[in-house]
Length: 154
Image (cartoon, rainbow, N blue to C red; front, side, top):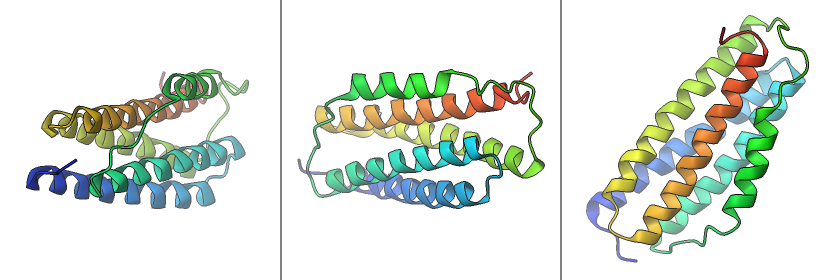
């Protein structure tokens, strides 16, 4: 795939966003007090690493195969849709800050992917970006579900 100058710039922006997410989720996993939140941050970080690999492949002109998406999405939905069983549990101010910031980050990153999808000529590249965007939205849902379970969304 031959990238246009605009596509190249958009991929650089996406790469930067993914690197920030990876760093942020790593730091947040270390700082989280609740073990469940710590695990959620670690899981999301591992997905962000895969997103970065996809972006780097696109930057090299290679459209990666995005197979297994439906099974992966199903696993993501299952892991994020159940409550922790401790509904109403009070959350520390630190954890509340971390999870709110993480959700805001996912909202932003998802919107950046939305814009980029429309700017790419190659259908395979659009599909890859759309796949990542759906996973970013799922991360947001997982964070929202955690917040809801802990009384932050009432």
